[in-house]
Length: 260
Image 1 (spheres, helix red, strand yellow):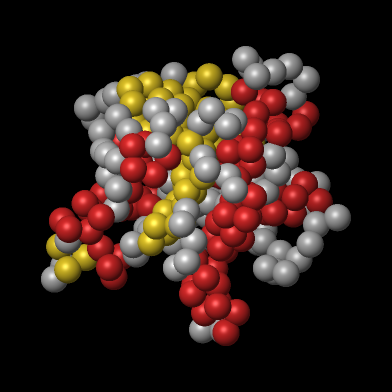
Image 2 (cartoon, one colour; image 1 turned 180 degrees about the horizontal axis):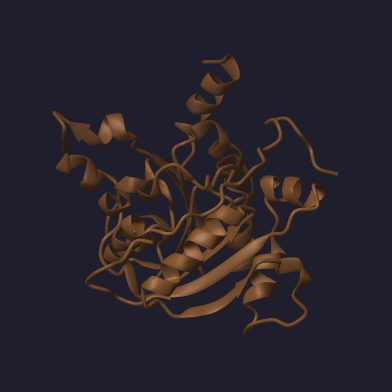
């Protein structure tokens, strides 16, 4: 591990807005360690950290935390938590929030599959999934799969909103098919966000308002950005898409690439 990463990890330990609990810390002898769940703030984010009763919004796979910080600045009457396992990337957003004094921002460094260990039922109002890995090889790793829908339902308020913003035709198609098979109300959907001339109740405006590092890469390459938002109405059974979907044929630029 490079010295720069080690320095960032050390600095993260000093940030008041960062909570860290990866798989190695959460598991003990192959089982979830209950003491870690208590320490992870489940059910107490509003009263212990945010000190208000405002809605809580998660950004899953938050990367550098650009959307988490940007949304927090845009909506001071909401609380935002960025979730990711990549601490060296998360450091950027956490540091910006710390230095600018944003009180409605927190970051949770953990594996997203453990999300139910860190939040209680009805604690989350909304979820954003922005430019995540489409995970084309394994459905259960896709953040919009029924595997994850079941987990989100355990922590979200009934009919909470889920937003997907992606460059990936594969993930957009997969998610569209998942929503056809499972009766979640879709409020807005487009395969070309910036070409839409009409807005759906201001939802496209919100999705356009912020651009992540990776989104700028895709736009610089002339790629279309896709967006879907739906309500997570409670279900008791789920059906996973089985159709063949064409795989994405492109790759990301290198980590140091800067879009114009």
